[in-house]
Length: 620
Image 1: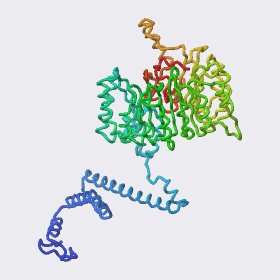
Image 2: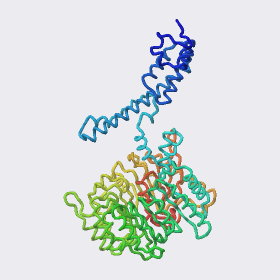
Image 3: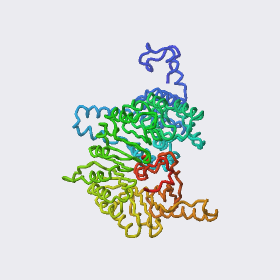
Image 4: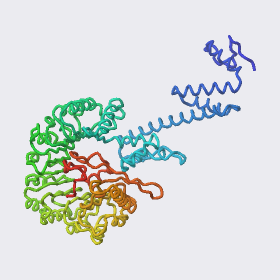
């Protein structure tokens, strides 16, 4: 073959010699002298460069096709070429699919009734092969949904599966943070300070935190001042925060209210739980969907009229109100319940409080309520019975709270008022919408008459004073098969409570079970020898293991006031992990029991018995 000169290329090889510069001609001349392997290598390098520059197209496809058909090239180079072409094709396909998706969306905007566009938008355009990992075959939305139903304790195993699962798990695990700061809790204090430091340095992590609950237990002094300064410095870095709770003492005061309001003016949920109401200026929030306040009396720095201002200023958004007090101190919520916001509520919780007739009358007119908690004492129990007894069913619709899905009724001092409980039981009849029920110390002979009608019940807390085979069988036969959480309390049991557990194995969705006998307590070293203590402790854990083995669906077990997470292994092996008991001057939050249903069942969603530690909190 004739070779062009270095100065004048041959016309047969260059169709437009007048446009060729000297460099191009020289390179072309040099290529002609290369071996086939060198030419193929040049072709591969050129293709990779064009792909990296985002110039993948038909020309690059041709280059790589010619390269792969060249004999004698190394396997490593073949792998590089195929990998580069595969990645380029995938990216190009994804771009085209995205453009096609935009076209379908444009069609749907122009013609919402176009069925072809709707069908294309619903269709998964990616083809998944069986040899791909499972997380690639299922859309990320499916894994997100699965993670929502896995308790955080078990969700931690996802951190070690893959980067894909770790990312999902971290979003759920760090969605809610509970930080504890107290004089006798140095380990937890250090963890809290480490987290403050991480939030400042890692914006991606900070965006995962949506709910922040800080538990305080400090007296006035330099340590408290230091901790508050560190808190105020870290607070603005929680950029995605939507819910905030301040629990303990000292209570949230005006200077910290200003800090929270300045950094997060659009909070959707605010909780203030302590002895007093010191949060002057808290009515400055305007976007609250939930407001929680636990204050014993009106001795705080803030005027109790500020509570009414919070409700009035958030009339358009407020849907969940939780108010707690202390039964042994004078208090009243009458002024707060004069707010027009009460009629808009969908969730209302009154705990450790005296409930006046005025408050109950305002509740009766809150027709949108879906969840109601009444825990405390009625000032006029006779009037309360009349209010509940006034409910009627007309055309299948209740006249009193027709949309109720969760009802918690725990009385203090009215245990013997059977007339009142009869009115409440009558109020609960024929409510298929009801999903959660806790009627405290209501007599079992009244409760068993309404349970068969509650066909959608998912969560039940019940008390059978004298537990025996007959009463337990009636309970099992009265509740729906899809119940997910059950709390059974008793005073006298004919046999050990763990022996009743096998009858619950038919409930395949039962994730939380608590069996409580007020006379049973964990063995104490102060009342027995060390050897006897060890024997009794082993028996204590053995009872819980037998319950876990008898009911395979259980993830959490409550045993006479204590909580355990069930860790199941191979060959039906069962291990137990103790969950921390509630601290004094705390409201029980911070311990995950697997979901909102279990938290509601165990009354951990409201500040009930704030001053009483968990193991001293007898079922009332």
